[in-house]
Length: 182
Image (tube, rainbow, N blue to C red):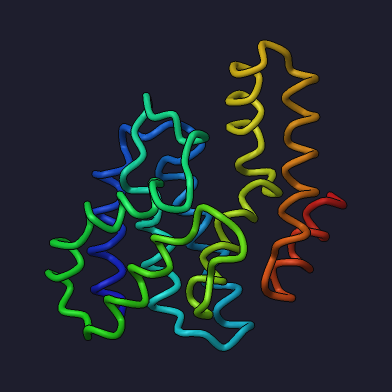
């Protein structure tokens, strides 16, 4: 497993270098850390969850208006298209390939995740909003958007409240609540 994960990280590092601060390498790394924790606790396939986490935002680039997406047209679906050849090169079983692609393609919107891997990717991705490690990136993003740091803080508060309602796993809910207290 380690050799495959190393290839995925190397690929992600190269592909994410031009992404915005909210969806760059640090975000993928944080998502992968959460995915590993949750997948162990929830007894999911750790390898599939980690690979999904590293690759889920591969298609996002700096100028992309990612907030204008919908279920049929979003960066998850575009990421799957972009990573297909790379994924084939990993030599995964077809079922693993399909599960990773499913998780990535549906990570943008709640209530469309059907597999444990897709639910863990949703949870891991959204836990970034609660992470002190990523907080400045979110604050800066929203401060630019709104032109006001207080409005940015209010937006983060709203997003955290929203995501708390949609976490699938007990592990993610508990983790988010603990991070909210710190």
